[in-house]
Image (cartoon, rainbow, N blue to C red):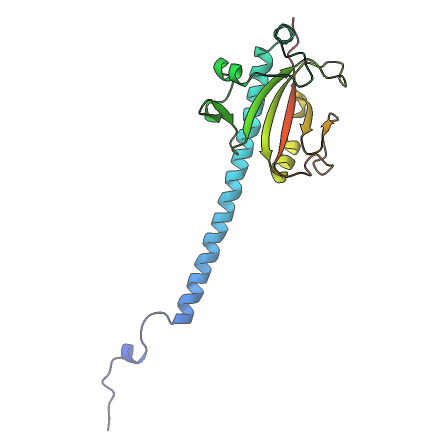
Length: 195
């Protein structure tokens, strides 16, 4: 009689078949993609939190630095468009250090930031304000900023794409202010009252 002397491993080779390997690689790919998407969301949430924190910091420091008396005695600040004081703000150290790049201000998203002071705005009985202007804000960033910015320090929001000042707070982000992509947005903050 014939006896099979071959080892069982020769009859049933060890390892994965091509189909089994493809399935395993597909599952690994799905896991990596899920982690990638989750980390992108975490990074975006971190950028938004840092942007909001930085804007609060700038507004509190700027309104303390640029008092009403300072604005009244500064040529150019008593106009509707206001006076660009970005260089002064940088020199005074009121900007978060991680927002400074090559003598300019950029938020965590990379938007260029301008600081403006003004004492003329006919629609408000108290026209004194410090404005943080951001360039190139996307629609989704606009919606998140409008929904999350602390309204107790904010006077109004202006979006270049809408040509409307939104002074009734809180603002509905779906109501038109965030309708334009890559627009300039200005956030005006209350001034500190002089004693």
